[in-house]
Length: 113
Image (cartoon, rainbow, N blue to C red; front, top):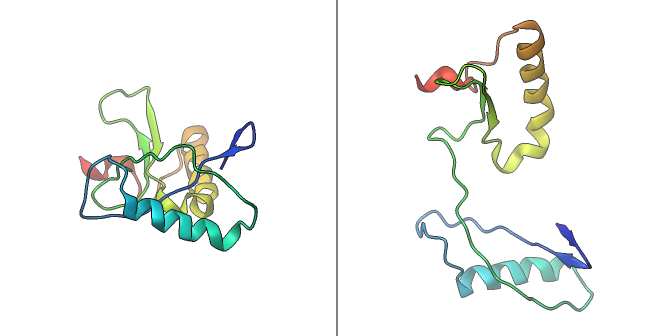
């Protein structure tokens, strides 16, 4: 992802067992291997960071009214496939907001109530 000034951010890895936000050499090497497949120009790593990507228990998007603050809405947790599913769910969300259409029960924010 370009971040300006000829700098790019690269990621991510998927570690399910080591749930902390500390960078590891193993993850760094995994990313370097992946970069080298698509980048043939010389590059320099200037920073190595780590973090956790939170998700809901069923790993599905969460869309709809906030359970406590009725004037707030959520549209989140689209996950790694966001680029493919966001247009579909964004249309549902807009239809809900404008026309009070139903939101798919599998992603409706009230499924956790």
